[in-house]
Length: 464
Image (cartoon, rainbow, N blue to C red):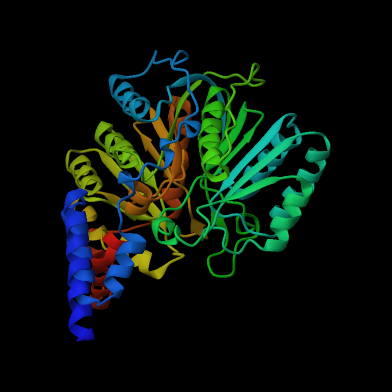
């Protein structure tokens, strides 16, 4: 009697999940993948769905008023932008509230040594507060240097707030966290493991990397707090990445993103007050784009889609995790077939075998459409950059995959500046010269075992 009852219960739960999938508008490929998992993996399929498959867009985490910093639209400056750039700027401002700011001074930071040298220089100059937010915050030389600096700054009356992701920073010890708190640093983790919230939060991570100093200087990009950016690691060698220093109104907008997250994790209510003076005003136009799984639309995917479609001459994409949605696949193929110089650069070395097979599973179709693919040979390439026609570019935390589009909290800076976009294009082309370019005829003749591994990985990619 017990077994028939359990079977009936399982069927009822499975049916309720199917109804939920249909009502929430999940795309067909993902729906089919979850149906396959639910009906072929008894019990385990349902558990996997509850952990990884639920649609956060129906649950507004940021619905509380205290999580909504006000951003003035009065300083928006669209002068000098092309019609295509204006369309992209309107897309962002409509959904995020962040306008294009025009008074920014920016600096590209290409490696860990340059990035952390600039970060520590800015932190040393702090007078009021330091805000830090990282997906990965690992103990080591960098973490120890930060702790020492925090001690000095707290003694000088500087407020310090830190958010770390509970999964990305899983190795962070209670001993180090205790030292931070004893120093006076306010520390919170994003979505900690707690009974009752574990299932609803496990699959949704805060992938943002932000530092803000006194509201006028900020940093964002792909670099985490980890010694592998200075010393490398035994498996992959040196990690290569791109970070961005912003002085100006854009820094205030990044601070608004931090404050929104801080108010959520701490259940406090602090304000993101714009600085009265900005020490390094510039002329670079940029726009901050913060996205998450509880947005009404997948805005990061829409941004990448719009950037690719706006290209008339070239679009260069550097990213370690290119597992594109159907829309991004079509955009890349259409651009290449239309004569646009479309180039993708990924790392020749991979930090995940499964993800590497997923990425490679798209190569043959891209190569056939005329997309050029380069494998960067030195260390591990972790940058997330797109440049279009030497006119605009984006640097940030988001990958070209479903996790960044649907599940993670991400932040990118969109830069409307020819000099910056042109410089990033030059860097990309120099990296192409040292990289291996894949050829369609050669790649299509790869061993059948590779094709089988790619096909298997791609089958489960909707669940990643």
